[in-house]
Amino acid sequence: MQFTTRTDSIRDLATDCLIIGVAMGQAFEGDLADINEAGGGLLQRLDIDGELPRKAGKTLMLHAPAGLTASRLLVVGLGKPEKLDGIAFVKAVQAAGKALRQSRARNAHCLLAEATVTDRGADWKIRQAALALAHADYVYDATKKPGEDAAPATATVSFPEAPGVTEQLALASALGAGIGRARGLGDLPPNLCTPVFLADVAQSLAKEIDGLEAEVLDERQMAELNMGALLAVGQGSANPPRLIRLRWRGGAEGEAPLAMVGKGVTFDTGGISLKPRELMEQMKFDMCGAAATIGAMEAVARLKLPINVDGVVAAVENMPDGKAYRPGDVITAMNGKTIEVHNTDAEGRMILADAIYWTGQNSQPKMMVDIATLTGACVVALGHHASGVMTQDDELAGELLAAGDRAADRAWRLPLWDDYQEQIETPFADMKNIGGMPAGSITAGCFLSRFADGQRWAHIDIAGSAWRWGKPESATGRPVGMLVEWLIGHAGGWDALGA
Ligand code: BES
Ligand code: MN
Ligand code: ZN
Image (cartoon, rainbow, N blue to C red; front, side):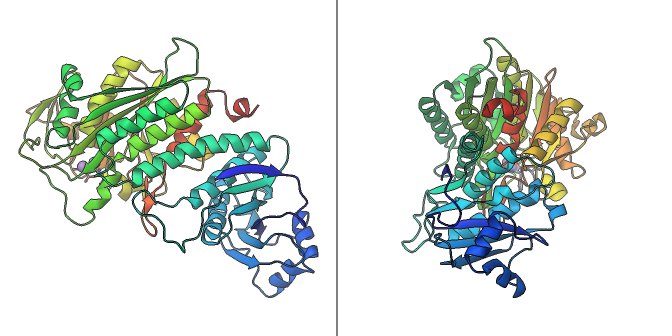
């Protein structure tokens, strides 16, 4: 989806679809008055008949609206003005995007950013409107071409010309490319999206984008580094593991980078602790932390952020096999700590253990976050609306939660108190890889904390937020929005970029 600006007057603007929003109780002023007048009281008549959608997220598509040169008029309800905050705004624009996607319109002109949003400014509204429309336009087509009668994608959306709008649309495009990347990778089937495939994606991105660099370690190199925990998970699969690092050096030479480490389990059968057959196919999404890391790195590079950033991906497949690691095994991780395996399905923390430690040693980051579809318990705790943040670093937690809020990609903090650490103790090793039923997300975080020694680190569990259940089910591209917002915060903020 391309974005442009236009200066044409609303009445004689040639477009396939003019998109407007109406809040509850909102009078027809400005553009709305103009549209209403051109149509001989069109909006008023709809309102009187009770068919003007003012409720949040309701839409109405009108064809050949009287008095306008637009072929369609799409009206979107914005709900109660006092409830129209950033999150509600994004939802409303996504509803508009969905209606637009289902129509045969190929281009549109969007007036939704003119809505008054309680807690956001003009630049934010433009960026998020563009992102939400692009999000709604996404259709999976990697392994299935849409039928001939399928509605077409929207090629171009324009916004009214105003100071700064062009710049904000360019920023949204760059960020949207990263979110779309994460989503597309998350949706791919596990027979195509293997660890080697993820490494190839990283390398081709590095080739495509100036200044982005990729390096890939194979299992031999990882063995030399004693990455016993990561290799243990991968050893049952015919698809060999890879450790991938993307680097962006937009900041001062030698300045410590911010680092992201993504869980890239391209398929999680559970291994010898095999998962039940129901819904096992969903475990192709277990590389969404990796997808978010790659997507965020793409956005960082396309935005040319003036900071240094490293994105590390631990990519493996977790399979049951004669060579697979087993419950009872004691594994030595790269940092020398020993792990007794109690459940081979707790594989994400195993691979992240080595990836986090390696990143700490090798990237020597200022701060580091890991992103992982780590625990079913996180879905139970937070559902699909929030990612879970765990860290003992209050300042970093604050940064991440605030970034999630600004990006309308929210997270919520769970405690990582030392009290939980005893749940992963065992007589046979330095730790075991599960902590039992209570606080399953937190004990996973406790496990990871033991490999982030001396680092400023936070763990982000995206088991609930990375995937949209329901119809059509799809990867969400989350939490690329939150991650990039966090990084932009360290790069002086959006204002510094748009200038
Ligand atoms: N990838 C899963 C986490 C998951 C499960 C996400 C279900 C979304 C839905 C992870 O590798 C896993 O299997 N975790 C186990 C941990 C348990 C064995 C301690 C889980 O959550 O059941
Ligand atoms: Mn698992
Ligand atoms: Zn997993």
